[in-house]
Image (cartoon, rainbow, N blue to C red; front, side, top):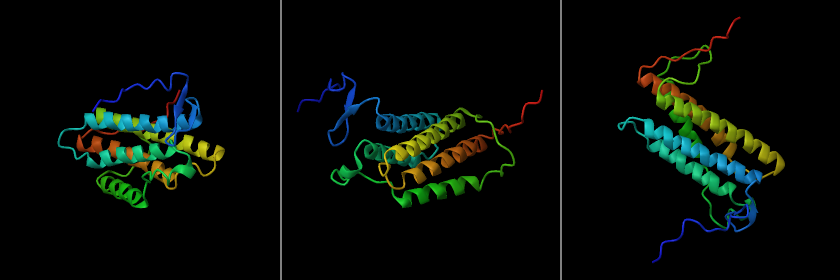
Length: 189
């Protein structure tokens, strides 16, 4: 069997195909939105690559797969998603995110002030995941306002919880590496 070419040349004129075959401009807000989801997924992969080999990263891989699920839904018109049997983000996965957050948070000192993003390389990578996640969330809200019903059910809750997860994960990684967090102190002149 012949291997498929990586390039199709179908996008050379500035359009791309949605899951159902509809062609739209690459500048369409829908393309920006699932491109941002892809960027977040890539940042997660980078963060995982910084983690020590003994760090259990299976859940992070599940998050990455869930983001692929979300991206496939965003790349398909809502009325065609059932036809293609696209995987949906389930409430049970959001509940698992919450349990993971609670479990990590239980080992951390409660915050009394904001902290500056940073610390270890790994924690810094997950702080970037958090901020990219928030950007995706903002774009989802905007897209939903412009195209009511196009954002899959549970997607906004998933993204909101996911950014919380990355915040706690960054703190947790610094904690396990015994790196002290830097608290925000307003600059005084």
